[in-house]
Image (tube, rainbow, N blue to C red):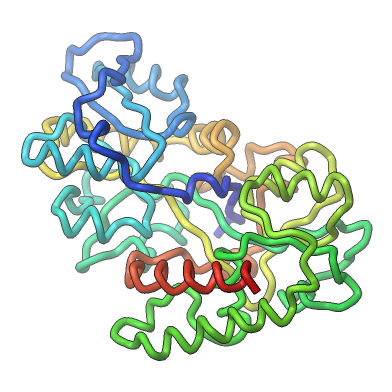
Length: 369
């Protein structure tokens, strides 16, 4: 299996539900140039996820008019589909894997029929039947873009970092930084617990004990931290200024530093880390479901599509062969050795409410300590 590309932006994980305003049918579906000899296809997705050149070619080749509605929030997609009920105005939505349960429980998506996607074989095997993508014994979407949390380090000062333990090494006191809520789940893994809470269903007492241990560990080592941060731009600036030598970072901000020539390395330590994946999902009762499958197949037809998606979105493509199309600097910023790739646990949709409640409370306690 080829190495996989995994840049990302932390802000994309802040998927808050939209208000009542998003329930109205917005006038933001914009057609791509072309004609509708073979019907239409309405897609709700994020900016820069589907390259315009790809859409233009698909439309020309298929005769299907593609209409794009841009979104910036998982909650907005959910609210719109819920409001429309059995008569959806969109055929494809873009759902993150760890939000599957919400959409599936509300019967907003239809199970994916991979038999209608001849190019399914071109999807990286790591995603073809991934555990996080299978719910109720069905697959629910085509994985297109992924990201992960990693250990970023300035290689001029930190040569090797095989374990997350280095974040607590006294020689780097005051020279580390992290997003508390995200890093806490990694610390849970580091301490031997389940940072994604999947094994804690109906075990709130076990989950709370594990969360408290991670919370107390971070409080004990609070003097290691120069600053807790929230936005990727903050950790980038700290690395540029050499305020920090080590940090927990989503792959996107670190990849941007590497692309800009800074001496930063991003890796997945031996204890592992977490990642997530965006998928294209066919809506339940989609009026143009057959056209939706034609587009899904076209996405997988060529690694050039995946490379374009990676370059313009800042995320990793899930399509085989993309790495071969990148230049040396892009590869340095965006690839992982196979053994590190296999350490990534993709976020599950299982037990999210318990996880969010406990992690949010513990995060506040760490910051207040």
